[in-house]
Image (cartoon, rainbow, N blue to C red):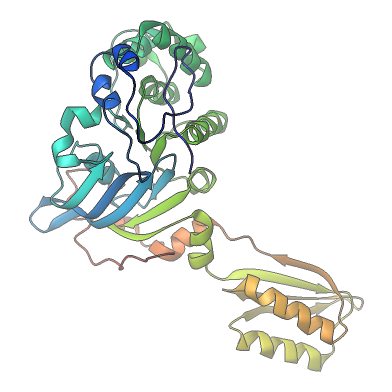
Length: 390
């Protein structure tokens, strides 16, 4: 389990206190405003900082955006929320950050019921939503002002603002108003501003939309570092490569329901679909040997895509299998027993995209609905039952 931390006087992130202790009186006196409420509370001792049980939200009677959602988040973990438009990702973030009241089920964040947490709970969270929220002062002043509102000491705020300006490549824009920034600059500014204050859980709803590849990589790397220091993160994205790179576990939502919750590797293994395997032999196969191999593969659930292609000196066979890794040891033994030399063997890599499509399907554009309050039918249609993964 990763360990967490708070910002010290230099604006850098320090190792945490014991999970069973409260901050000292000296630490409390450093801060004013909402953060004092956060610092006055103990860290959950079991490492679980967020938990939902059968959580649901209906925009009207029987019209659910999220239903029967049960998941958890641990300290220092990055949890990804994946799903098509209308899957319930943004609604889930709003429920967990107290912006929407649950219709059914329960959700506790940092040991507090989201129905009762209010301002004190929100002071312990960071949230970057898809919608923009911009002020009329300069970028630099925005950052320090935002930190001040959350009780961060002046010198810490100044140091941290410089760190964020450099990290998010806003040096040229520090004197400009947010409204004068480009779309990508505004998005970087939004994320930077939220990271100005101390928090225990950070919710990021598609934070890299509109960012170029370099900016995206810098932000993802920074989030990984913060998670290693103990920050728990809930991260929604449509960019599956990001989720594969960043997230410890991934929750796949479809039409408001949870389909699966597991690591990216486990999702790829379970739902990645058939993968292509190519075998190159150093000599052509005799007809009876080739027929024997194709029959044995079919008996093990593989389908031959292209039979032997020989050039007089070598041969190639290509097939698909849902259990390619399990099949390879058998094949190696089969070839060895017949004195066949394998010149080359390649297995198509499993991808998170393949697993995602295997779970939710490609569907039609009519199935895609933005998970916003004015769209009320996304979770009312039948859905697959949740998959419990070990």
